[in-house]
Image (cartoon, rainbow, N blue to C red; front, side, top):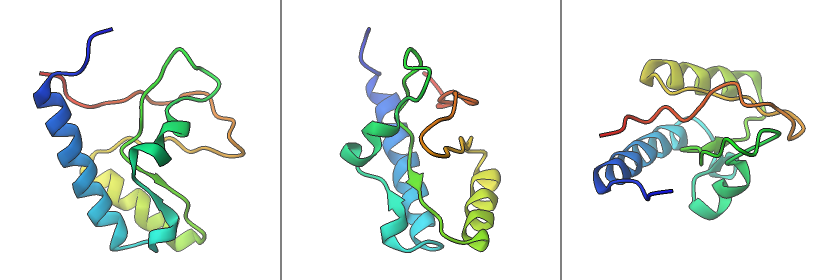
Length: 99
């Protein structure tokens, strides 16, 4: 497997930073996982052959928080994969543009 091109990595970092900043505007910091270390456990689920580190993981506590996160992701065209009890079979793939 080859490593991502620098431009793909830069694009991902920019997207991750922009998303994190927007999420911090609607959720408490304790509800947002954005570091590489914190995101690694979420790179796959029951389908371990399909690995993709998410841009962020959120742990909303209210319906309003869920609604706000979904609106944000919809507006930015960011796919959302819901994960309940750590058992979800990948419904979406990483959709980052490749150069």
